[in-house]
Picture (spheres, rainbow, N blue to C red):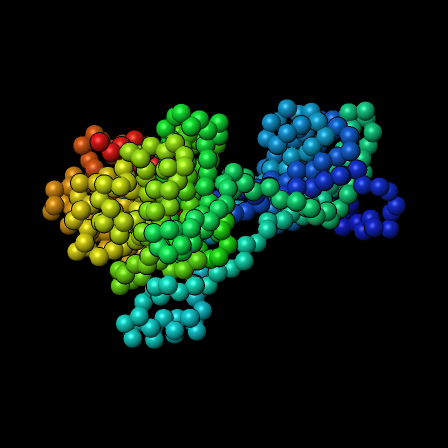
Length: 420
């Protein structure tokens, strides 16, 4: 009852100095985008670990998973002046299944009647400004310093800074393409920790979807796991590598299977980075979702010996130009209920099989326990197949990429491929 009372108590009339000197919001990227995952409270003195618990803090509209005292974020050494408040993950939201706007639906029907579908090549899309993740928190219980001093509750506190895990490890830059009249391309680059120029590193290139078209360089990093998964500490510990995430400020392909100059510009960027850094050109991989995956297929059909393997998510392309993919290493992923990608990849995979590709197809439930999910995926991998085709049960267009970058056996198979 005391804590419930304190939660609603207006303590602004009380006069005392705050013992919390800093509040930092910690964001992480999940399959459906960047979200608040933890909050770090810094106190003016080291706290007694036994004096803090999940019951001592309140975060509006979130459940607290763990609270502990620490010197550093996630070290859990149980000593220090920081209190780490870890939050339970939010359920993923598939925005493609949200109620549609009748006006937008009417516009889509009109465009289909005119033979116009999907984003317009070269258009600027509908970019949204990047939103800084912030936090609100209340200390609703009493906590103690290691000297047994009691710190009273402090309510309705707001974060004054934000740390973006993994996103913060990328550097942003602009590529000027001398081969295309000095046209520019924004990009994000992850450089392996402890980079050694005397060692060769793989490079994975992620190409984003049309919904992420934006002049904001970091947009492709915050929208989902397409770039982030390969730069995560867990992945990099096993597979030190470069991660390149170009940011397109225009739509680079359309549903008529036309493509813009940005695709070749991306190749020029990769070639430039390969001269600047010690990149293993026999282990360059490409991946993309929706528009980005369409770009992947276009590039694979034209630059037939450039990429060691491709991880193509929720995409489609002109089946008539895909024969060159038959000898390449490809892993396709779609969802059953994706009306565009599913029939297209069905046709493409059949065409590749007719041209001599060794293809393995399987359908799987992406909603099951992730450990069991990945064990099942791993069981399908063999030494002779060069093209895999995974279909998620049910699902939607965006659902495909919300789960694909957690399908680690597929990602590891991609990284196991190398050009001769």
